[in-house]
Structures are given as C-alpha cells and as structure tokens.
Length: 405
Image 1: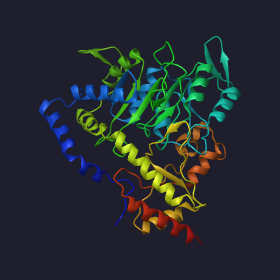
Image 2: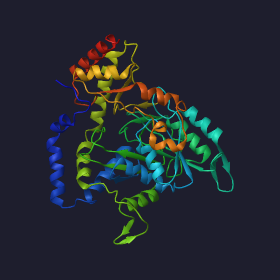
Image 3: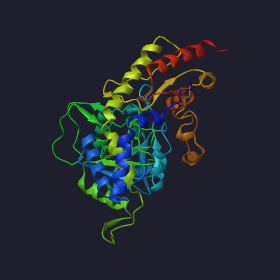
Image 4: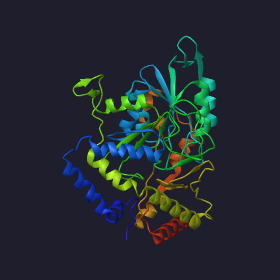
C-alpha cells in the first residue's frame, strides 16, 4: 500500500464527530465572519502559547505581513532573515517596501546561525545617532528587525538572537509557521515584550519570545485548519488592537476606519475547526516525537544519512522529518517506485530564486543553505503513521542506498 507524505484523512476519521460538531455550531450561530468562534480561538491560542493576545488571520503570510506593518517597517528599511525557508518569509518583507537581508543557517538545526548573524551586524551596520537606527554602511537603509524562522518543528536559538536584538535596539518577529507547540528552554527571558520585569520560566512556546510571533494553520501543519488560516501572537496590547483593525479593513468601530487595512480576517468555520483540534495538539506532538525517535532507532547506523537533530535548548515537534542524503533524486525515485511519498523542502534557497535576483546575491554566498537545498529529503511523518510503515520506509531507504550506482 502507498504511504503518503501526509494523510489528513486518517486524522479526520478519528475526530470526525468533533469537526462536524464545530461546523454545525457555526451554521447554527449564523456568524461566518469574525464573531464568538474567532474570539474564543484567539483566547485559547494565546493561552496555549503563553502570551496575552492572539489575532486570527486569513493565512500565515497575512500574519507575517501584519506583524511587519505593526512595527512600522516599510520603504527604506531592512529585515534580517534566512534564505532557507518558504518564500512568504521574504515576500511579506518586500510587500511592505522593505528589503530582506539574508544570513546563513546553522547546519544542525537548519535555523538562523547566530554567529553569522553577529558577524553581519558588526560588518554591515553602524548606528546613526541622527535617526536612532542601525544603518547599512553601503545602502544607508535602516535595519529594523530580525525574523528568525523556526524550521521543520524546531525553534531557532532564541536567547542569543534576543540578546543581539536588545544590544542593537532591533525588533524580533518569530516565523513559527512550522513550530506549533515547539519550546525553548531557559531560566529567564531576556525581556518581557510588555515591558517590566523579565519573565521567569523553564520552557517558552514558539511565538512567545519575540515581539510578535506568526503562525500558519495550513492543513498539513501540526495544528491545521481545513483551509487557509493563521494568527499573530504578542504581549503588547496596543499592537494587538492595531492588528485587529488591520485584519478588518482598518475598521475601529462601526463604519469608522482609522487607517487603510486588509481583508485578512480568520474565517469563523476555520476558527471552530482549529478549536476542535487544539485539544489534541499536545498528544499529536508527543506522537510525532515518538515516531521521530523510532526513525532514529531504525536509521542511526546508516552513515550516509544525516538524521534530524534535536538541539539541547528546546523541544522539537517534528512538523517534518527531514534527513539529508547523497544522490537525493535517485533515492527519492527509488522510494516513489516503492510507493513511499517524499518531499524536498526547499530545493532552491531564496537568494538564488529568480524572484530575488535583484537583491544581488550569488551562488556560494550562503553555503550551508545551498548544501541543505541539495540534500534534504522529507520522509512521511504524522501522528497517525503506523510503526510498521516506518519500519518499511527505513528498510526501503536502506535498500535504495545499497542500490546506488
């Protein structure tokens, strides 16, 4: 039998009654836009993430766009992020009129390399007292923010990122689209986004450490809607109030529009479905971790494969189980012929995409991202995947490697 990369049918069969009940509730209310379902999901998601506020959006891309706008990022500004991510991370920066500045990734976590980040800040930027911002030494553009991406279910190394942001007076936006429930371990947060005394805790959820955190609830995510959906979380009440205006065409009250906004509202049906699924998220994440451990057990002795690594600072929730293999396309074809679906996230880093040729980057500028793009391969992983299927995948992968040449 084929093994799909993701099989949402299995998930929905198990919770079909709860999903149907949530949908019926919305139809009974007659409120399909905003309303109580959206408000309740926002409260529940904020509580889950450990923040004061959550604002639902129509997609993860909309969440990123709004987070940038709330920080008044626009033309003449720059935002540091990584080249190894989905294009929305960069395209929402450019949508504001700002410019993405790429920094290479760390090869074990596939997230922002803190050492390269510090080098970039020291080499390319100087503080301009007149305007009170870091300014690019070459272009005179202002650096406003750092946008780390929590990739494949694992958070970037947030403590040093936050410390650098504090040192250089920069904002931090977490792209947590693939990290629902991922956690970062530290005794005390460097600052509280709401101001005041730093927060003491042990584990911080993805999205809760930066000034704002952005999520996608695309159907295949660890917490997925039955369509497009997203959210922004923050501890800042003023930003949350503005986010609520911006998602709803800038509307403040009645027909009063304080500014131009967008039709970025979270659909009430999707909010109800997300509420139904949220109660399962922790159990699903734990099952993902168990299956990832089984993959490691089955493949640990295969020298040709680089397995995903859980960094000591956090809790990985394995949105994807991504290995690195030589001769990837041949291996992938072998698995496909055996009925095992795989994916390549992402085969071309952003700095080499035709859409970003104007930024002036060249092959070799970000060698880790480029090497990962040549070798990463996502294997099937979802809570309903059967252990015997992982055994079959591991066995077939071994056969594929032996058949090389």
